Image 1 (tube, rainbow over the protein chains, first blue to last red):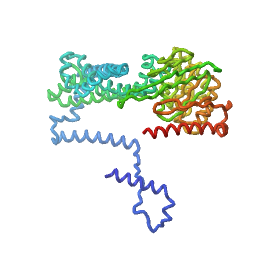
Image 2: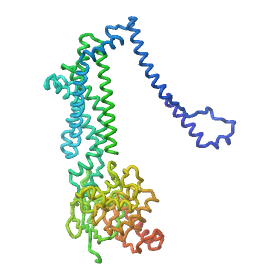
Image 3: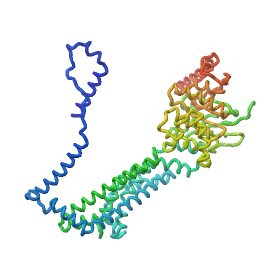
Image 4: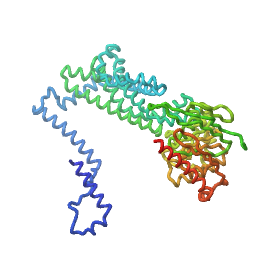
Length: 294
Length: 262
């Protein structure tokens, strides 16, 4: 409804702009039924937006604290900010915070690297043979539609409860996205581009190195930020199933022992880790894009 | 024959299998192009102009017939002729100079050496100041210039140009035609030029081959005996107009025949 309103008012104001001379001739006796102008949204200054954002956060925390103190909120299930802060201090000074973060970080990064690399190579390999691509493609798509997390218990059984199984789950999640996206890049290559290379007498390997890989790089890079998030999910789920370290295990353990404050602390640590890795990969992406220059 | 034949398309036929039966794209086409000539092919869409080019460039094997370059059998061999398409196909991740040396690079010339050879050409032929720019920073005309220089630098005697100016605006197209003639007289290549534009074909060429459709074949060959170097004013001379009339007439007859067959 609001959308219709906007578009009709925009078009009528455009009509007014195109034929301004027509208005007076038809006389002021017949003014337009309604004068409409293009709706304009004025941007708030950045400090205002930032201030409101901080205000909302502080408000939520304060409301949470007060509600728990007043008994409006069951502090046993929801904990309270003051308790969370206390737990935060002990977790980072006396607890295993850094060891857990390091464990989760390692399995995420390794799963991300292995999955992205292997997936990209697999996607690129489809260029070499249409027949091979046709044979393999349904398997890749089946694996894509399969909820990989459902396989996590099996993966943990096969690879043990150590770091390897977490890397394997993270890899399973990331590899398919990279494969399919890179393959989409391969399919998007202009056949005339290949014809140009062959008309210049190129070998298959030259076409691959000088055309296919550079043409697919933007596609490969576009997956990085999605994959870092997927890798983290995989690592945490791996830790949920069986692990001796990691933020996922900390969350699970805290939940099972009704230490809700610790759950919040670990979730918070996980979020920070996630944001840091996301930003880092975003920077990497910018750097790579400048490198490949498209 | 005054000059030796550089490229000979010898009785070439091409049949494609389609779901609705077989489709004959080329029917016994023979072309003999002497060294250093500028020859155009004109014809309606679907007359097999591009198929001739693909066969001459070795990108397709003809169903029958051979391709000879310098009296050597070049049927189905790639890298023997320069080939330029309507699309410039410049690689967006390479600078202009690195795009232009692509052919040399593929032939194994080291990049610095290839660049050294390419840079003076870029500067001489209207791309000075853009040597290290990326293609997306250039206008359509400049991109086509770069694509043509890439084809020239590949350094084959024969160059195939498949509607290279088809996507340009009229003004740029005229400039590019004159620029192409300048390059052609500087480099002395044998050029085969495909176009839809009758005036363009006559203005540029020594010889115009008019093609017909269903099956694709050469209907008539017209010699263009206008003096060179040609100025734009020659397009209004009676000789030019007569050639143009004749070409259009041939194309019309072919279209009428297609209309009757359909």
